[in-house]
Amino acid sequence: MSDEKKVGIYRIVCKGKNYIGQSRDIERRFADHKSVYKHSRMQSPLYSDMRKYGLKAFNFEILLECDSSVTNDKLDEYEARYIRAYDSIKKGYNRRPGGSTSSPTLEQRMKTSRTMMGHPCSEETKRKIGKGNERAVICITTGEVFPSVKEAMAVYGNEPHNQLFCGIKSSRSGLRFERYKEKSMS
Image (cartoon, rainbow, N blue to C red; front, side, top):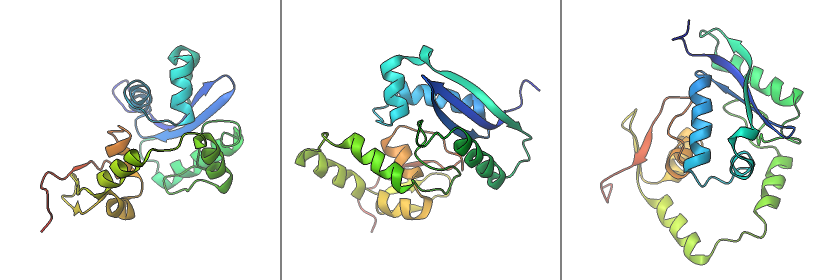
């Protein structure tokens, strides 16, 4: 059983604040969180606190281990339940109510907006972000090519953005995105 991937719901906790997540390979997901904390500039509250307090201040634990045959819908349901039980949107690091298709709540969007106040982007940064989003993207897994990150996100949600801009290389769906090498899509 040591070679089997642990599937289920996990928790990351620091100073009373919780992050609840789900994975089909929890150990790999813990490693992903540690890698993003070290190698990414992602400014989520979780990763900001990891940089501030260090990994030793964080506990990583499995809350619920499931059989590998569990459905994604059931994992979404379990994740949402634990997020509510730990109140980890209001009193923790979660930004969404759980599940792969959930959207941030209005309260969470306001909280995120407040944390970004006072950190305005320069016109140069805005221009670079816009230019980067206009470049073509390819889904390596399916071979689909999109004229821009925005159009790839319309089909696949945040995964293209997370992989291209946030340094997250793995995804729940197994899809992989990269910048398309050709300059034009004609």
